Image (cartoon, rainbow, N blue to C red; front, side):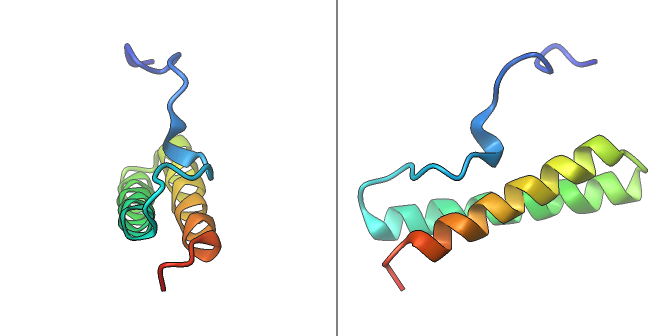
Length: 71
């Protein structure tokens, strides 16, 4: 366990984080990229926990983008 494992991180939260739709779109896209990187890293290192966290984070970013009206 790492030193931050017990800290509640909002990485996979689907909650809107910005009032501006362009900022929200950019933030959600970043969340998807970050999630995908974690997913791939978890797959490469056989770390199922990291892989699952990445999948959740990626999905949360997609959900945020679907609710956003910027595009």
